[in-house]
Length: 130
Image (cartoon, rainbow, N blue to C red):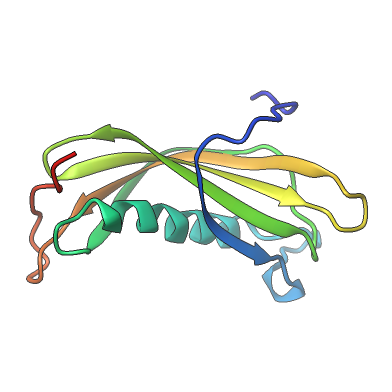
């Protein structure tokens, strides 16, 4: 993984502040919390491509943790649709932090999530036309 990446790729879909309740035993932000923020952000892109405005996460095809997140960091998630199937879509999601104390921006995670569009009955349905 390239730890020096400086170019953000995708649309801003989530922004929040990392809080003390979300830390692991090392005092860093728990990876599962970051994963859930990324999934929420990717869901925004997925829902916009579903005719019923509903989509579910079916897999995380890859996930890389690059840098740690500290309490108080602003966490921003960026997402980009990278593949469309008939009912499913792959969305690339990156998380970046901004430290108010050091004034540094860091690339902290990235992953590829697969979502499926669903109808009102929870059955898979065809994506909206491009």
